[in-house]
View 1 (cartoon, one colour):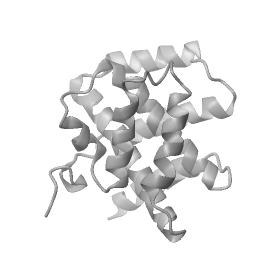
View 2: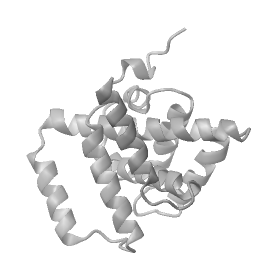
View 3: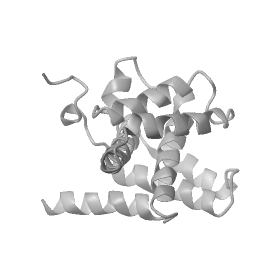
View 4: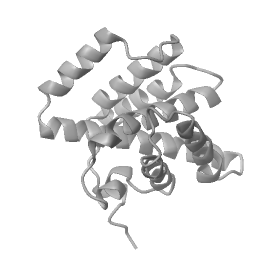
Length: 179
């Protein structure tokens, strides 16, 4: 029986734009910059201001697609080692979220954990989240941070290859264009 949250029913969104945002955040973290660079923040604010609701929605969908793709890849990697992705990955990321109270207010942690669990269960995180109403402003930074934490986790388990998560997605996008 098919679920209404099956990824086949979910739009992929603007995965390239979402990846650009996440990759930019990863590079800042790896450079030791934990506070927002004023110039970078100005550019992000300018980009957000230039987006209409459709483009912004596509960016959100793209971030959820990244979460799905990373959790799917992690699921296969966990299976190769006899582990369950939800049991192995989600507690670690939730613990990290709880250590970041300025980014992850306590009330958004369950939603972000739900996105990870939905993706780890083979469901579309975006369609899963849509069941509970529209995205809130309070969920925007945590959504971006969740995708960033997940990408960083992928990089770390791949021998601290700081670009692995980005290459994983760009390779998948290139193969999709070829098909």
